[in-house]
Amino acid sequence: MSKSIELRPDWKRWFWGYFFGILLIPLAGIGLFVLWKVHSKKNSYVYEVTDQQIRASEGNISQAVDLVNIKTLDIEQNWIDKKFDLGDVTLITESRTIKLLGQTNPQALAETISTAIHAERRRIEELNKVKKEPVELPPPGTIDKLDYLTGLWQQGLISNEDYKKEKQNFEK
Image 1 (cartoon, rainbow, N blue to C red):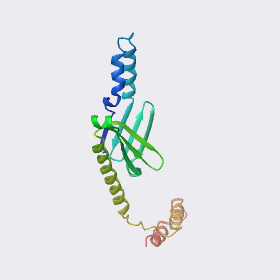
Image 2 (image 1 turned 135 degrees about the vertical axis):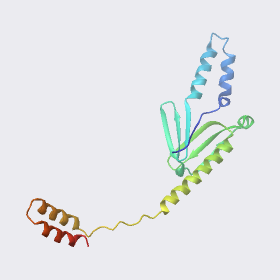
Image 3 (image 1 turned 180 degrees about the vertical axis):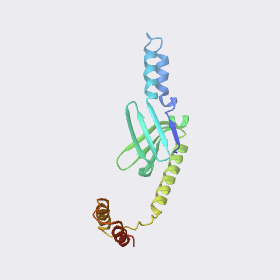
Image 4 (image 1 turned 30 degrees about the horizontal axis):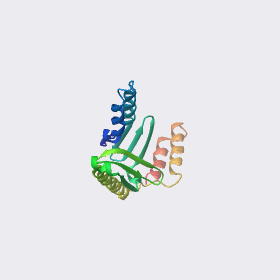
């Protein structure tokens, strides 16, 4: 069973939207609309991190990357984000980029994801090292000949003794 963690952006990422929404409340309720819009936008982002992939959803749009395909992890913070201990963690693969917006303590999150990436790569390497025992197959055509012999016996065209005698030739 795989572990799963759900992440959402911190409210501080939309601090200015909330701030102006509160300031605009006295103006005929425009602030309430702004607050609702900012809150809806904030809640539309959902990130699901499992031990094999990361899925980012924004509303109806969803994309996922396997941990083993992540080539680079970047952290983006401006000076205000550093004061609030916020940041965006960007996951870069060869074909796509996913940005985890407004994450608290982005350095620790990036470190955790990096550890998960290395663990998943080790797990896949171990799976590839496991050698499967080769299955010994009968010579080509043997199964067809045995089926033909069984068909003759079932139709009564050969006796039980002849069937057993010929079948021993295939079991060697």
